[in-house]
Image 1: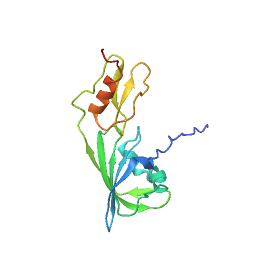
Image 2: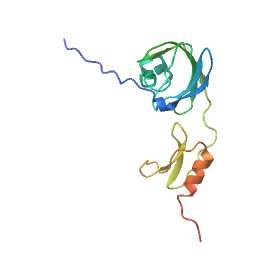
Image 3: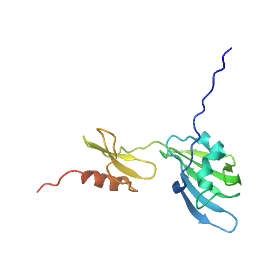
Length: 154
């Protein structure tokens, strides 16, 4: 009888730079956290995804409220921290809200497209997928950046 080893995928980790303090009250704090690409709602059941956050500037504490946003903004979750230490944070059952898909198509030309990158919009070259601008907070600013990729007529 041969045993087959099951290989589990590595546990995701939330980047502390993607967590921002929204409010700091007397009893609890409120945070917004953006998940890394590939994360799903079920990953919120794994306390270890918060390990980097717990070693960062604003570690989560019991009773803190967390508003979690999926990378592609297709859903959000609201949860309360029920236990936390330096290696993990345990969330009470998160309340998931699904967002409708985009109704407007992002601007693109033959060579470039505007793409959502989790924390803003960037211009991406279609031929190789390389991002050619920094992230901006609105699709309109990214569209302006895309238009600036082309020379102006004299």
